[in-house]
Image (cartoon, rainbow, N blue to C red):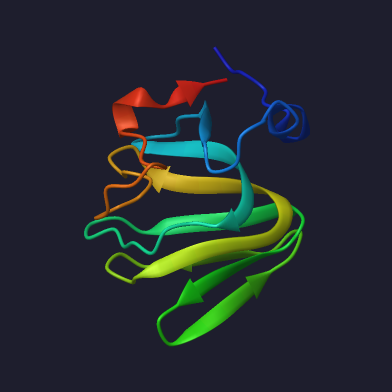
Length: 122
C-alpha cells in the first residue's frame, strides 16, 4: 500500500528541537523530520553517512575544519566518520535521510540521544 507523506504537515507537528520523527522507511533507511534550534552535540557516525535537507530556515553543519551553511532546498551528506555539529541560530525544519541503524548522537551519549528503536513514527 502506498502512503503519501506531506512533509509540511509533518514538520508542523514538531514541538521540541532535536527530536527526530520517522515519516517513511525506504529500504533500510529512515526519512526523518526534525526541528533544529540552537547547538547540537559534536559527534560522528562510524558506519553511516547522514543527509541533511533544509526545508525551512537556515542551519550550519560545523566541522572541525570548516562550516557548511544550508538554506531552504539545500542539502549536504556528511560522510561516515566525519565529526560534525548541526547548529541553527533560529528554528529550522530539516529532513534527514539515514540508515535505520544510525543513533542520532552517534558515538556520544547525551541528553539528546534517542536509540533507533525508540524513534517515534508520525
